Image 1 (cartoon, rainbow, N blue to C red):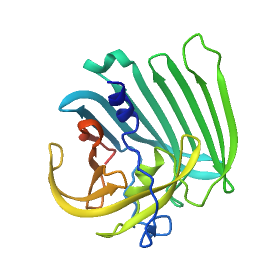
Image 2: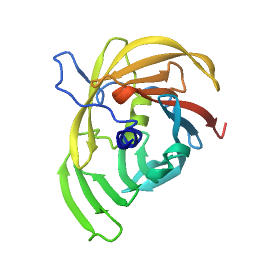
Image 3: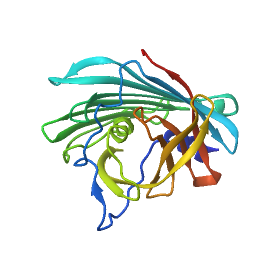
Length: 254
């Protein structure tokens, strides 16, 4: 059951791998015009493990703002266990401040509660650097631990939440493999994914929709609608029998 909790936490993780000679930089790939991201969009996902309801995730483009002199979208995400998995008391809140012009984050914050474990991560992105700070407490009565460092980062480096909106904003070609820099767990990774195929998928909100199927280097798959909205409608994590997140609700200002 501990492994199920880990999978819920890493649901939208893009696996890293050795790059092939044919891999294309997603940072340098053209963006979609007009950008599909809209303030007020709120997407809710039901998470199941072996068909058992395991959790819920909501991603919300909350409002526009300014961070470090940049015009940004303030995006919030919340994920927590439910029902059978309450024993874990798992709760994860993330915020990213995403520049819709440069398609890069300006600031990221992650708050995690996993039973007795608590951690807060804060990252500022500016001038080719990431100012990273993590404050954690393994158990309620344990001493607090602090880790702080400044990392040199490549242009277009994403955080664990902004990567979703970055992927939605880019043109993707069938059969191509892409890579981009991702800051996660205090390190910069080379994240990769392949546009495997097009497929029709049934969703109770959208009906039958055509989607691009993206496969990560670890074999997990993402279904993103092949239209102007680019909604992530399904995510499948293959480890330990499979974990699936399904889009169940869409709210919008439109």
